[in-house]
Picture 1 (cartoon, each protein chain N blue to C red):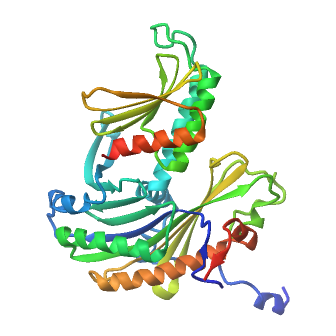
Picture 2: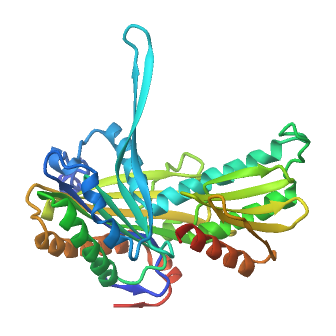
Picture 3: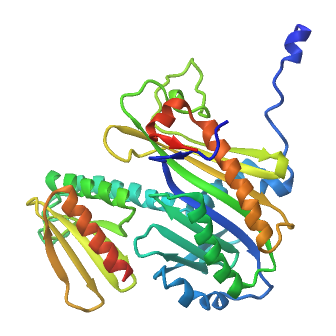
Amino acid sequence: MALHKHYANAPIREALIDIRVELLPGTELSSLDEADELIRVDYPTRSEMKLFQGEISLIGQASASAKQEIIGYRFSARDGKQVVQTRLDGFTFSRLTPYEHWEALRDEAKKLWRIYQGVARPQKITRIAVRYINQIDIPLPMRDFKDFFRTFPDVSEDLPQELGGFLMQLQIPQEDFDGMLVLTEALVPPARPNVASVVLDIDVFKISDNLGSGDDAWSFLELLRERKNEIFEGCITDKARELFGPSVM
Amino acid sequence: MPLATQNARPPAIYLPLSGQQAEGPEFILSLGKIRRAVEASVYWRALEAFVRAEAQLMEFSRLTADWDSYEAEPPNATARECAAQILGILRTSNLPPTRVVPSSEGGVGICFVNGEAYADIESLNSGELLAVMYTGTEEPHVWEITQNEESIIEAVEQIRGHLTS
């Protein structure tokens, strides 16, 4: 299996590094505010991340209530191509298209993580993930999605074969490191005329109480990244690879 | 079943999960997880916003004259088609609009709001394209956009700069 391929026109639309943490009990949102000034140097636009919760009660007289809670902040770079989330339950860094390379993603995420770590002072890391969202635009007309994908929903031959849309999610344990792959594949509205756009969302993660508090976790991310590459290559065919242009190892 | 065939059986494809791996193995919890996975991603959230915007745009074809009770004309096919083209460019540029509205001037408004900063692109029934930007109560900056991809991309980047400044 070919690894570490770097395609000229990689279909990556978003690459994420996600680290969930446990903070000291009673840590308040205001503690994250201390990171504002440092993050806003390169990520000036801040928006609040809200969690909406609703409750419907059918006991006695039916009633409904809803509340919203701010759980963190989302900061965007001036060009909108990089976004960092700082939350009470963790940290996420996203790189949007055009994707450069893993090292740039990792190093920027690490720089921002240090800022987050400095103010949030996480007790431990509880979940760590590498997630790549690919959008593969297949030129029309095409014969069969399976000419491009090796992991794809199978429709019985007794049913019509035309697909108007689909959403498939597979949860595949990664037993060697006690982790998990959540593979989401979906047909989405076409990015432009005369293509069919399929999203391949590869989320590889590990949940554990033993992920350490810093450097160990960053070493582990390298393994997740390798696994993500194997999974991506394992999901596509050579015909799909041709869409991404020449590759270098 | 012949023994050889039995031996050739592939391994079971269902692997029971430990609670730790699965974050809750029940399928129904997956629906909530899909929602959270969408929320965590800039790409999926933007895609959702574009699908919603395109659906709003399609709804405008059902508006009739005087839809706002102030004698406004409904957005015509020219305005809607041009707005659809702009939404395509915005999707490529990864700048989802806050909302898409019919304009009382006759046309479609594609609006962006970030705090006090506001911008919109108006695709008018006449075929003209206008952009507007302002912050708070300051005087709006209005300019006409030539109807080609380069000019629209240029306006989109100006709007992005305004929203993030």
